[in-house]
Length: 545
Image 1: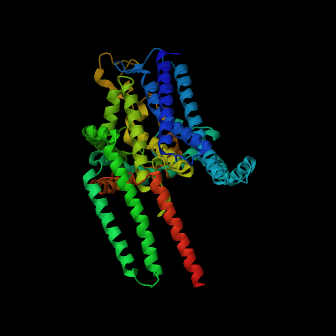
Image 2: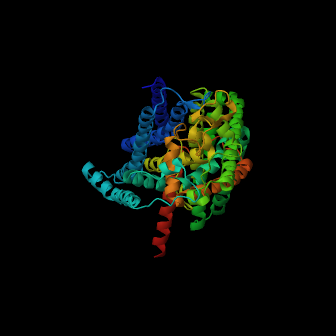
Image 3: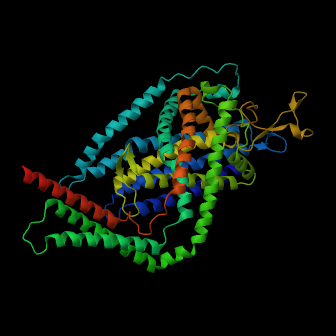
């Protein structure tokens, strides 16, 4: 085995281990301090590690195929014989299929099972009864996955696009029935992921950098606002109490409810004031204030990265609709980008010094992950307009963590398509590979014709240019089922539109409060308020009947 292959897989192993510890820290940071479930926690950690590791495989895939070509001659290196390339790409393909299969297993079985297992908790139930109930509910999701897998067996490849006779395209249309079924199942997950990607990731790309740039409100101003709110609250309580003081008149139900609400509001405001005072006196807060200039600088850099990423997406989707080799019949695939793509240019240049491109790609993946998480925290886990769960530091219930992990898995799966097809299509398809486009005497030789060394594209000879496995899997989905290609393409337009709207909202959004209103204590206070209001409502109904 060539040394370059061993180095690549070693780096991948190190990064995967780092992503595991990142997932552990991320889950521990958000999970509820008291209401935690070990099984749900483990499933969340493994799910996040799996999807991040799947994305981290993309730059390894790119590096391996890029290393097979000598950039000076535009020919294959001596060690890159067909047999070596076959086993190298087969290994990467197996790892991809294992990762995609495990992702489907988590989404359709393990995560639903962990969710229902926690929901079925009851002191009177045995563990066997909980497992049995959870399996009964989970069977619905398993049935959906089996139906999708079977349906994929009967999806026929699309007809070859007109006026195209490419070895590259022919290879995309040949695959086994098992690969076809798994590809269809993964395509369905990509489809769901695009919804999450547009709804959460697009606005999150603006929310995250602007939160860092704007920071939090000045403590003095927030303290003054809370003081004023407390003064108004207490004055209103005094007015209601003075109205009934010295009389035998019973307090009306309306005034009593208002007093109860004012009392709850006063305790929440008092708690917020105490939190502000504790933060103001803490060493951690002083350190954050000292590091505030660095936070602004990092926020500006992330905002710049955001604009470059969105510009790359916009330029590529314009490029696709203008220069696609076969239009919507093959999902707007392009031979090579004609418009300048800044992310693609950066990655191609960094690929010359491994592992700089790998580091940059992992950073982009983590940034998309954090942007998606910012969107989920801000918007909440919702079904249409109904808020299901809130993601809160140290106060997220196990069900919320599991829902968030599903959303993150789907969004990062969609990111797999976006990275390959629109963010950096040239780099993601062929990396830094080039080929000699000059033939003399039936032999390719560019030793005296360096200008004939061209970047690889889909028209390049397949015996020199090896496409990445990631691009092959995604292009195979797009070519064999153009419906998904069309949906994926226009979802990128929706992504750009939502990003612009989110950017405008984030630009004029007020800075965050210093008091962590998402804390566990406030959550319990709000829960108590809901229960108390429910009791008053029940008592009022009883009295009327």
